[in-house]
Amino acid sequence: MGKTKEKKKESQLVIRVEKAEKTAFLTLCEALDTSAGRELRRFMRAFVAAKSAQIEEDATAKIAADAPKKAKKARTAEPAEAPMETGAAETGAGKPAPDGSDAAAQDPAAADSAPAAAKPRKRAAKAPAGSL
Image (cartoon, rainbow, N blue to C red; front, top):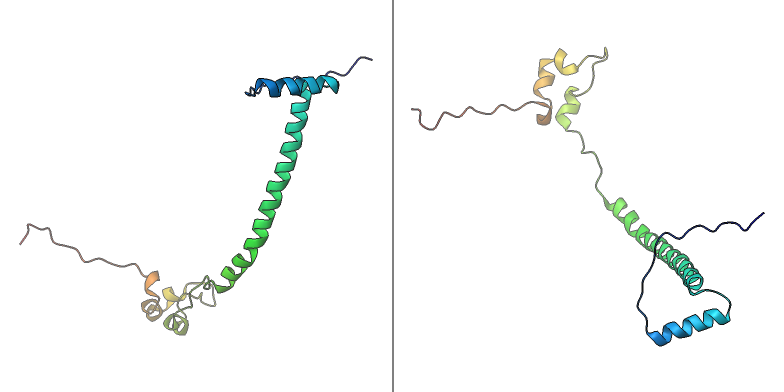
């Protein structure tokens, strides 16, 4: 069996460095029997792993710090539903009749005392501006 084929690289990264810095890096890589590309890829992988973990820890810490604020806000929020009007509760408007039909349909007085939001409003017709 032969040597396993390494995954082909798909892109390049071009950077500008001082000539002396590049020469020193290449010389050191040669002395360590490695390539400049291999060392830069190793650095990039380590950098990404370390910084990703740091960012994740920071995000987790922020969520933990915000949790008490959100809990306090939830405790002080107003109830989601408004209390029912007393007139509707007394007449039974908005409640189904025992036989399953609408109580307002059976009792016209209950329909008159239903909450205003349940009744359609009629607007007064305006006369055209030029008619008299």
